[in-house]
Amino acid sequence: MDARHFENRADRPIVIVGSLNMDLVMRTPRVPESGETLEGHGFSTVPGGKGANQAVACARLGGRVALVGKVGADAFGRTLCDGLIRDGVHVSHVAAHPEAGTGVAVILVEDSGQNRILLAAGANGTLDVADIEGARALIENAAMLILQLEVPMAAVERAVEIAHSAGVPVLLNPAPARQLPEGLLSRVSILVPNETEASLLSGMTVSDSASAQEAASRFLAQGVGSVLVTLGAQGVVVVDGAGGRHMPAQAVKAVDTTAAGDTFIGGLAVALAEGKSIDAAVALGQRASALCVTRPGAQPSIPYRHELDCRELP
Image 1 (cartoon, helix red, strand yellow):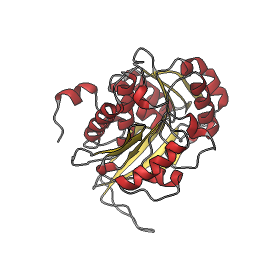
Image 2: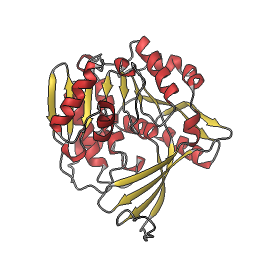
Image 3: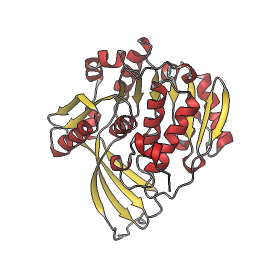
Image 4: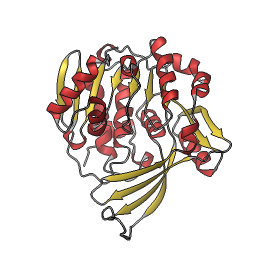
């Protein structure tokens, strides 16, 4: 399904199958060398996880959204769900695992704004096909299904199968980078990898607009409807049935790039669900992402729609 032909589905929820993590964030002048101890300057616990981040981004940017995932039966899990509810995300399909703890991400944020992340999947790793089947009706009636790869691949595959069979557009953010099962991409309407993920999946080095377009063409040949390769400060390369084009990023001073990609996907998905063109949807996602990186943290940095309409970016 080519994203240029999405109908207006804003009356249906965007459904996200993905991870919920509590981020343990330490700011540092730089990443320490092996065996080196550095003094950081700030520690915080911040709600995160790619699934939850994308759900919050969709909700704050004007979409109806429901999340399918797992947390632990612990304080972190309760805090994450409470925050999602405050943002208007439906969490009836976020279950608390009785034994596994809530997922945790340890994030080092350099003064330059770049980050390094270590994940402990916890309850995210217990999301299974039965959980997806329990959300079948929700997925079949979605405006769009969004997935990442911080939950087991079997759950991802089943969710994609259900959505594809029901004619629901599928947006896959293949992060963190890993190989995909054969045939999965043929059921994906929109693929949104960054340079690292596009390089792994295409088997070639992706570092600029030209190489991104070449990699994207390989994904189209496997059946993907539209490919959006995110290149950080270089912007986004879009390749679909209309050809390829490069959409430059707005220049801002980055404070923290955590959740920038998730915010982009939230803006993209909401705009597409509203029936906007893919280029207009990319522009909204880029504007939201640009504002996101000027703020610290994952979910706290994600902007609201009214901020994009009324506020000039730094």
